[in-house]
Length: 150
Image 1 (cartoon, rainbow, N blue to C red):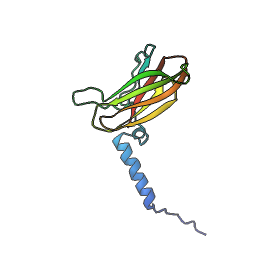
Image 2 (image 1 turned 90 degrees about the vertical axis):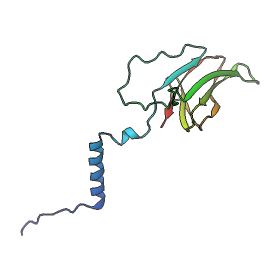
Image 3 (image 1 turned 60 degrees about the vertical axis):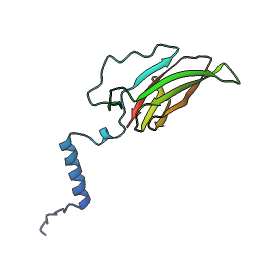
């Protein structure tokens, strides 16, 4: 018996997949880098000093740039406040007011500082929303951080 050489013919799917890999390699970007981009976190708080800025900057291109107005101001501003509940004044609602001064819709993720306890807030252009971040017992101070989602 003679051995036959098996010749494989590439399928259409493997050709398309190969072309996609080559295109990604040429562009210098990975598919993962394009999914789930956010801006650098911005910290704040009420009743306590906000967290100092990080002295160690991330790599260039790690975060997406924040949305800005034509004159360079940030589109998103977050302001914290607390409010005692009427039924039990020892229970404090921890609230954030999120303001979008730009005409485009922007999604914002607000979290307790250093936590995964977050809320996502989609804002339309020129919209201002008030959302409860959480509830605390007796303390009127809390820290938060927010990021713009792309």
